[in-house]
Amino acid sequence: MRFQRGALRKVRRRAGDMWMLRYRLTQPDGRRSEHTAPIGLVRDFPKEKDAWREVDRLGLHVRINLVRC
Image (cartoon, rainbow, N blue to C red; front, side, top):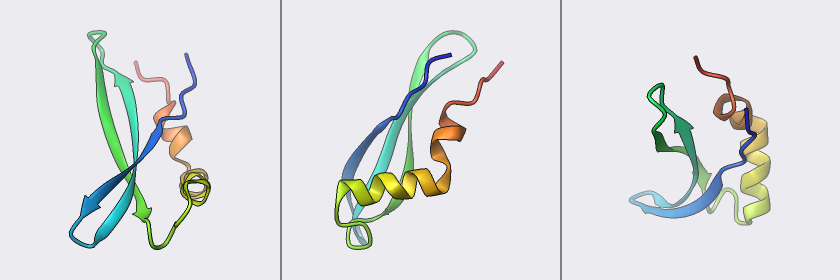
C-alpha cells in the first residue's frame, strides 16, 4: 500500500472560494479514479497550511489510505 497525501485546490463556489482535497483511489479492476473532498472556505482557512491542518483534524488521510479489497 502506498501512502498518499492528495493535493489541495481552490475552487469557486457560490458561497465563496473553497478548499478541495483531490486524491485518487484504485478501483477493484485496477483503474484509478479521482475523488474530491471539501475542506472548508478560504475565508475560514486563508493559508494553505491552515487547510492542511483541517485535513489532519478531519482525519481524511486515514480515510484516503484505507486498504480496500
